[in-house]
Length: 175
View 1: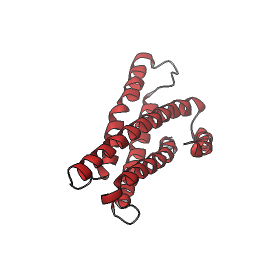
View 2 (view 1 turned 120 degrees about the vertical axis):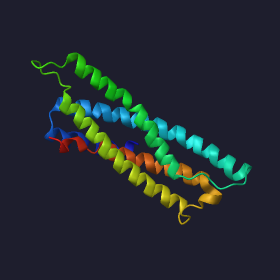
View 3 (view 1 turned 30 degrees about the vertical axis):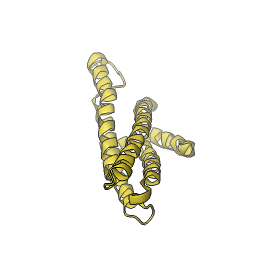
């Protein structure tokens, strides 16, 4: 995860060119929450999928679980986890924003955050499904027989790609 730290600093400075520092601060606070949440979700789902693989493949002698479900379950769980910051932003907007003040959270900021979430989620899920397909096709990993290694590698690849995708400032398209 520390491999991408310089890249994150570059994105913060580049995005600050497009929007003011307060808006970039709020957006990257949401992005930091999203990265930490996704890290937790991917870690937990990796353990769940390893357990399902062991049970389905070795104990029940059945087919291994579909790895594309890993991506969709991670995204769905993240969707519900991101309802919290959007709810907080909405509450702050309703409570403190008035016509005559310059409170940082306005409707444009909420729209920018939603646009950033939607665009990065579409890209995240599509790349994640491509990674899941490559892990299951049998060329790189023998998923049927050695799926535990494939699940661990797939979770790591998915999280690292997601980290880069989340840090991209999609919200600067709105301004």
